[in-house]
Length: 282
Image 1 (cartoon, rainbow, N blue to C red):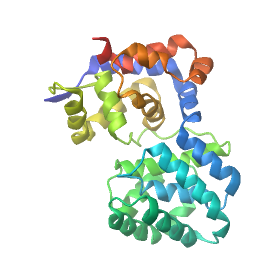
Image 2 (image 1 turned 60 degrees about the vertical axis):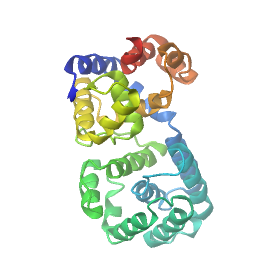
Image 3 (image 1 turned 30 degrees about the vertical axis):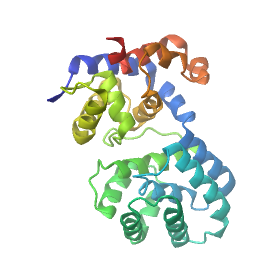
Image 4 (image 1 turned 180 degrees about the vertical axis):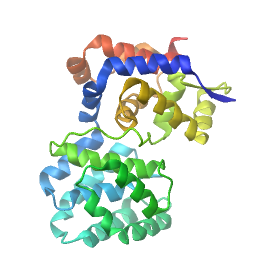
């Protein structure tokens, strides 16, 4: 059994509405993935840096390391080679070499996808226009995946981060859903916005991963009710997802980044943590 709990959605949506979009963007500012993007952008400038992060995000699945480590490694290698880029195809060749060395799980599948992306070079013309919804649709067509596919959605988020890194702020469209991974499934479980009949957290998270469409639907409702687009909410959930090993809500509250407390205030963060880790309070 699996179902959306609308009472819990109301509570979580209220916490996000109180947080607001500007405070949500503070979570983005401390995201290690954004820090990796800034590192590369500050050293490579506009030398196809946006395209490199966008394309590599389409291959960022079944990683052999944590996501933040993967993107830090990619940024450092990009900085070492970006001066060599004269066109889009040099970027593709660089990412192919990087994939063969560091992103080796399902490597043949990833290289095949990369070659498919190579044939969609017209997508590059969309990267700087800020029409993220159109880009997501055309990216999905290019790689032959659904619009809600994790890597399609994530490629848009990483492109958004390249824009944010140079001071271009924007609001991501509501029609682009959250990319469901284990961190998102875990917070979906602990917030109880989707209920399952699984006794153990591990089995509950596994069921949520198998039913990712229900997870997306639930967070889409939260997004609509809080007036915060799903991909922005994603940064908050991704941050709190690192506490998946914690059994006591007090440990979560004690270990929230001090920068967040300083910028956002303790009361609003404690309230948000209590809603996102509702199960720990039972």
